[in-house]
Image 1 (tube, one colour):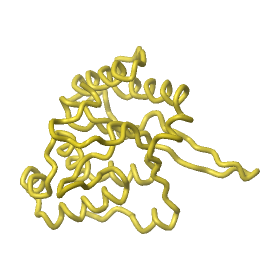
Image 2 (cartoon, one colour):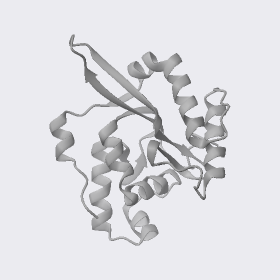
Image 3 (spheres, helix red, strand yellow):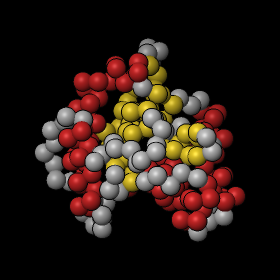
Length: 198
């Protein structure tokens, strides 16, 4: 089921709002995506992750530190965990009157799913029409909708996720901002975090 944690997982945030640039830096790095998916399946030590991916622990720790700084991963008792069950992606802008405008991207984010680990929704990078795991992804999105009590009509995973985000944003955004965990970054911090070439 969507949002169901693996056994022995600590309690984590239900929803985190992640800055657009921070999210983009993660999804453009295949190793980091694979690491988050492994953590969502219960593989939570650096040694286990390194072994599963066939990468040195030094490289794994470098990626884990970047994921921790971004708020996607949490560290507890020597283990690394996905920091929330559901991630929504936002951006902040200031209009000409000085008002702050928050945009939540309905086609970007991710969530824990028991069957596939972590489902990254990558917006324009998603190619549902040619994806080999389309059916698994669609089932994960349908399970997420059921868990959140949201009705979706789409049989396309990306469109289904968009429907979910639009619905929960409409009815719960103020509550999310009050109770959720918002990762806000200054533009200087974002520049410092530019992704490393692999």
